[in-house]
Length: 95
Image 1: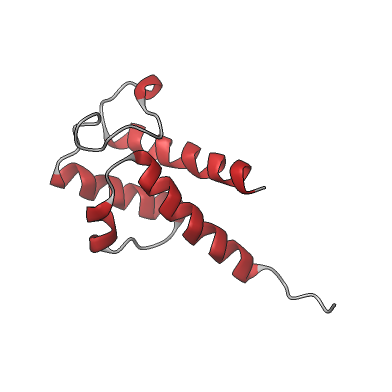
Image 2 (image 1 turned 90 degrees about the vertical axis):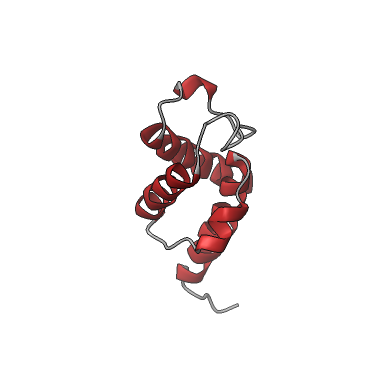
């Protein structure tokens, strides 16, 4: 379930990157570097962060966004956060 969930997060992050940059979607991979491959400077990262906040309905702290180097960094962070929040919403079952 974890890898399928990560794949879902990757798809959403890729879509956010597509909507924020002019990079060919076929060239966006988990290994894509935000600065070098996607040409995202400081302003571009801010726009991407706002897009991700909208897509995932959460707030990304500036210090976290500053540490993202690759698309995979974003996916890993959001997968942990999104997955944790998902489990917090599940009802507790009596065992």
